[in-house]
Image (cartoon, rainbow, N blue to C red; front, side, top):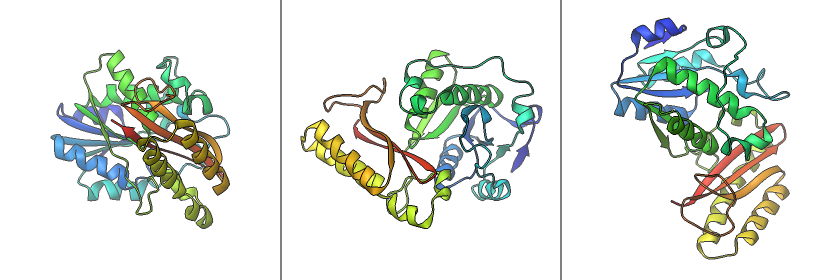
Length: 273
């Protein structure tokens, strides 16, 4: 496995038929599954590890975000990744960026409303990484549902010659979606958080049985709040526009965000494809 810390070095090793997995490190089985898919479908698998300061707002967890670089590299090597791009902040942003990437509309809802500027940071760093790596396919996990929608829209609107492959959410046995932030949870909080997937699943079941949407959403919100969550949102949205829908339709997904203790978690579940 080759580890490159500079853009120039990476460009000497990458090839056209590459599958790319951009990450912020603290790798878990969800990331590793994406690496497996890249290795399976492309001649070269490339992973980036970079904690992007542009996507963290004031008071968020940039400074305490986990950075277990050695164990991340070991995990990537065990999965036989071909190349890891491990740039420092000065390599990615030698100067304060004067050029940013904005994807209007879908970035202003949900995570974008709760975390102003977050998706400008996401779109900007992903566009930079795409230009640096120039992959054939980029792999993302569906757990970050809105991020997938933003990146898909950016690729389409800018005619980037990249395919995006969105892979299913990887979960613990009790349903908790894998996330680097799960390690922030206390033992007591870890016992509570499987309720997220339980509520998503029961809400989906209720909608497919024909129970009225507002009743389903109201019950779900009450259960999450009573479990101890500071609820940000629990909604049914159109998968393309991300706007709330008021009745069951094709291509709709339940989305959740909420905080328990100091940890903010997100999840989603497709109701109809």
